[in-house]
Length: 268
Image 1 (cartoon, helix red, strand yellow):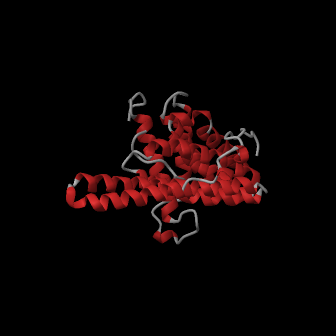
Image 2 (cartoon, rainbow, N blue to C red):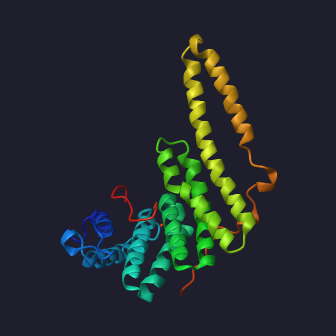
């Protein structure tokens, strides 16, 4: 493909994502029988090279930069897990920090993915403070994303991808001794699930009410039940989201689980 082709970066990014997925799913990273593998360790190295080049060529203000940084960080994480080279750990953390930092506003979905990868990676390495920092950022980005996503048809898919985050984040806060933040986080997770359930029930009530007199009584009874559930689900004032969770910014440290994986092939 000509170097000047307008969609060259997108196609190369998709190629790298395919190589990463093939590497991970074929067992090339786990010592699986080579006779049963499609991918090879060289596929991972090629993906890293492609993504490094694509990221370097992506303008700073491009929305595509966030997903490409996430993919690059995931690729470096995979290679660090294989080789344990400190340079991959340092560079991988750096690019994931970039993706979930200030530029995450360009694409909150993939900023969230990067934050979860960063937090999960730190948890796997036993770096408790860094894991807690990562989950703070992930929680803030999840709040932003769900405020928009709750009005879309794909809401349930989003909830499935992040619901585990609340439990993992609560555990991370306990491990650094921040028990108030752990309680708040569990409450936030419960609130997200309850809010979605209430929205579905309200939609059902609206449909029944529009169906005519035959369904009016059932609609009224459901409306009362939903109202009671909404009242019961309001958080106790003592558990209101507050500064207990701490700041939502991870400082980039020069030295030193997706939504966590290579980005989708679409929309880059």
